Image (tube, rainbow, N blue to C red; front, side):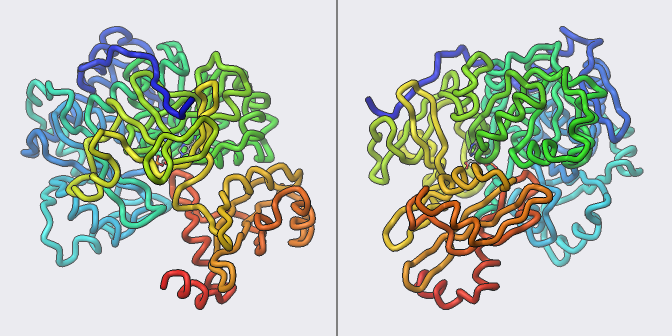
Length: 537
Ligand code: AMP
């Protein structure tokens, strides 16, 4: 048997985002659609349809035409959803801009995307976006013609000057959204996604969680990322489920309050978000009994954390989903009916209408149980990277397979496990070490709350292992304690040579740990520059 799987056949829909949205509005006009707690906004599907129409009319009224690109640069808020659905309604291409971007990254995206309009919030407690924009635009010859500030006169004027938005797009293969892949490596690339990609992916996520109009999904993940704008909005418009946004950005307390007070039935998060809630001093005071299901995704999901979410957050049907921006994002998912073991220790099986294979470095499909790179094919594969034909050709091969860069194994039962990143692999004196494996092992230590393992340059061995460890509150440990715990239990070459106890990890807004920042810190603090040069030479 080889590591190839094909999900069940599915009659993919050819409806556009707006057509799907309209169907839901017509089916459930009076049901809750969107709750944005920090803005005190509560909308039914009919209310949301009005906001979306007004937004689409305003965008067209500014002179934007189908196919034009519109940037949205804000933390989670109601207008983000109006713009997402308003762009889709008007045939515009929404460009998601990460709220963590600073002038350098913003300039890059303004130029690269050729956006004609940018809708942003002038500032919040985290950033002065207006000032960052001014700096990014300085001396640049950009296509940007309209800058609209949320909550200010320019937004009201845009809405007031709205005109008939036209019939809207008809072709489901048109690009509707550009999402920039998170900056854990190199410069960001714009992923071109079509209605077909996103509508169907949303439907598949919804089916694996059995989401219906009776569900209320708590979405503390960022909207600019696929977890929010597909896992949230596209699931919601496919089913009629309400979306609850607890705060502009992740906050454990606001999330737990949202679940309790708005009776959420589903909760999303990257692993660190669940860890933050489970560890919160007020965790035990919250009532999670309304919860039924949820998704943990976006990064390796430790088994122990999954089990605690199932048991302590009242999520008997909690699942893990695996995917990436380039695949809309979902590739594999466990179903709510799967056994607890499958839902906590694997990332599920190939989704409907999705092919998955695991290949060796030479491109051969590997035997069951053997590790290799996970590739996927089907409706879910992006149209390509925006204006990057070479990068696109590297990511999607001639046969249409998207190469994810993730290492995985497939079990005989067809379930997958993600075992690391191709680029993360540590090679120490010729021994391949997968950080994920060492992390899972260290995670079994009762005092360790979270841990990240990286390779750092070593003059003799090429690389050596470093671990950054977050201890549970009140716990103490020395470097030697940690190494003693490893001795005899994992291969000697996997035992961390360097250990650093930390409170936080460097992270992107989506909770993706920036291992390259950790590596740079180690090189600087431990004076490993020489070794680093030998390695790159
Ligand atoms: P992004 O494109 O920002 O969504 O990042 C996608 C990457 O996150 C994938 O290529 C994986 O490396 C990682 N990832 C996403 N979901 C999972 C998961 N369930 N388990 C392990 N890694 C994941």
